[in-house]
Length: 120
Image 1 (cartoon, rainbow, N blue to C red):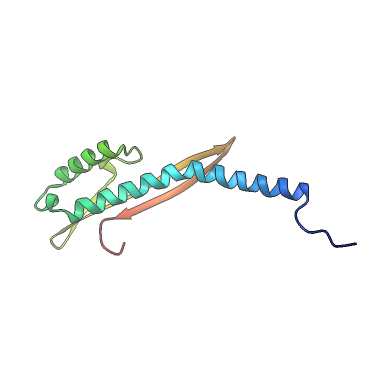
Image 2: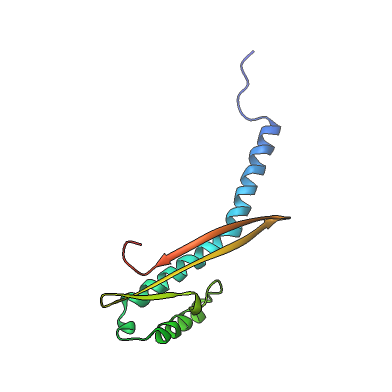
Protein backbone atom coordinates (compact mmCIF):
# COMPACT_ATOMS: atom_id res chain seq x y z
CA UNK A 1 0.00 0.00 0.00
CA UNK A 2 1.06 3.50 -0.70
CA UNK A 3 1.57 5.80 2.21
CA UNK A 4 -1.28 8.26 2.72
CA UNK A 5 -0.46 11.98 2.50
CA UNK A 6 -2.28 15.14 3.62
CA UNK A 7 -4.33 16.23 6.57
CA UNK A 8 -6.92 14.14 8.28
CA UNK A 9 -10.34 15.62 8.90
CA UNK A 10 -9.49 16.26 12.55
CA UNK A 11 -6.25 17.99 11.56
CA UNK A 12 -8.09 20.10 9.01
CA UNK A 13 -10.66 21.17 11.63
CA UNK A 14 -7.91 22.08 14.13
CA UNK A 15 -5.94 24.10 11.56
CA UNK A 16 -9.14 25.82 10.40
CA UNK A 17 -10.11 26.67 13.98
CA UNK A 18 -6.66 28.12 14.64
CA UNK A 19 -6.84 30.25 11.49
CA UNK A 20 -10.30 31.52 12.47
CA UNK A 21 -9.03 32.50 15.96
CA UNK A 22 -6.05 34.37 14.49
CA UNK A 23 -8.34 36.15 12.02
CA UNK A 24 -10.77 37.18 14.80
CA UNK A 25 -7.96 38.59 16.95
CA UNK A 26 -6.58 40.42 13.92
CA UNK A 27 -9.96 41.95 13.10
CA UNK A 28 -10.42 43.16 16.68
CA UNK A 29 -6.89 44.58 17.01
CA UNK A 30 -6.63 46.20 13.55
CA UNK A 31 -8.79 49.30 14.33
CA UNK A 32 -6.68 50.04 17.40
CA UNK A 33 -3.44 49.79 15.42
CA UNK A 34 -4.84 51.96 12.62
CA UNK A 35 -5.87 54.61 15.17
CA UNK A 36 -2.38 54.54 16.74
CA UNK A 37 -0.72 55.15 13.36
CA UNK A 38 -3.22 57.96 12.67
CA UNK A 39 -2.30 59.63 15.98
CA UNK A 40 1.41 59.21 15.27
CA UNK A 41 1.04 60.60 11.74
CA UNK A 42 -0.88 63.65 13.01
CA UNK A 43 1.64 64.35 15.79
CA UNK A 44 4.58 64.10 13.38
CA UNK A 45 2.82 66.24 10.78
CA UNK A 46 2.05 68.92 13.37
CA UNK A 47 5.66 69.05 14.53
CA UNK A 48 7.06 69.05 10.98
CA UNK A 49 4.77 71.79 9.68
CA UNK A 50 5.31 75.43 10.38
CA UNK A 51 2.01 75.75 12.26
CA UNK A 52 3.68 75.26 15.66
CA UNK A 53 6.47 77.82 15.32
CA UNK A 54 6.03 80.20 18.25
CA UNK A 55 2.90 78.38 19.38
CA UNK A 56 2.01 78.03 23.03
CA UNK A 57 1.01 74.75 24.66
CA UNK A 58 -2.72 75.59 24.45
CA UNK A 59 -2.25 76.37 20.73
CA UNK A 60 -0.67 72.95 20.17
CA UNK A 61 -3.50 71.27 22.07
CA UNK A 62 -6.13 73.10 19.98
CA UNK A 63 -4.35 72.10 16.78
CA UNK A 64 -4.37 68.45 17.87
CA UNK A 65 -8.06 68.65 18.82
CA UNK A 66 -8.89 69.93 15.33
CA UNK A 67 -6.97 67.09 13.73
CA UNK A 68 -8.51 64.55 16.13
CA UNK A 69 -12.00 65.71 15.18
CA UNK A 70 -11.28 65.27 11.49
CA UNK A 71 -9.66 61.84 11.89
CA UNK A 72 -12.13 60.62 14.56
CA UNK A 73 -9.47 59.90 17.19
CA UNK A 74 -11.12 58.67 20.39
CA UNK A 75 -8.31 56.97 22.34
CA UNK A 76 -6.51 60.11 23.49
CA UNK A 77 -7.28 63.79 23.81
CA UNK A 78 -5.04 66.82 23.69
CA UNK A 79 -4.76 66.66 27.49
CA UNK A 80 -2.91 63.35 27.12
CA UNK A 81 -0.12 64.92 25.05
CA UNK A 82 3.24 65.79 26.58
CA UNK A 83 4.51 68.91 24.84
CA UNK A 84 8.15 69.98 25.26
CA UNK A 85 10.73 72.03 23.40
CA UNK A 86 14.09 70.72 22.26
CA UNK A 87 16.06 73.64 20.93
CA UNK A 88 13.75 75.45 18.52
CA UNK A 89 11.60 72.38 17.84
CA UNK A 90 8.36 71.46 19.56
CA UNK A 91 8.31 67.78 20.56
CA UNK A 92 4.93 66.13 21.10
CA UNK A 93 4.86 62.77 22.90
CA UNK A 94 2.02 60.50 23.92
CA UNK A 95 1.50 57.17 25.64
CA UNK A 96 -1.71 55.28 26.29
CA UNK A 97 -3.08 51.84 26.92
CA UNK A 98 -5.84 50.25 24.85
CA UNK A 99 -7.92 47.31 26.07
CA UNK A 100 -9.41 45.17 23.29
CA UNK A 101 -12.15 42.77 24.38
CA UNK A 102 -11.71 39.43 22.62
CA UNK A 103 -14.36 37.08 24.03
CA UNK A 104 -15.85 36.21 27.41
CA UNK A 105 -13.51 37.32 30.17
CA UNK A 106 -10.51 37.55 27.80
CA UNK A 107 -9.09 40.94 26.83
CA UNK A 108 -5.89 42.08 25.21
CA UNK A 109 -4.09 45.15 26.59
CA UNK A 110 -1.83 47.02 24.19
CA UNK A 111 0.53 49.82 25.31
CA UNK A 112 1.08 52.46 22.65
CA UNK A 113 3.57 55.31 22.75
CA UNK A 114 4.96 57.71 20.21
CA UNK A 115 6.73 60.98 19.71
CA UNK A 116 7.22 63.57 17.03
CA UNK A 117 10.99 63.59 17.65
CA UNK A 118 13.01 61.97 14.87
CA UNK A 119 14.26 58.50 15.72
CA UNK A 120 11.76 57.85 18.49
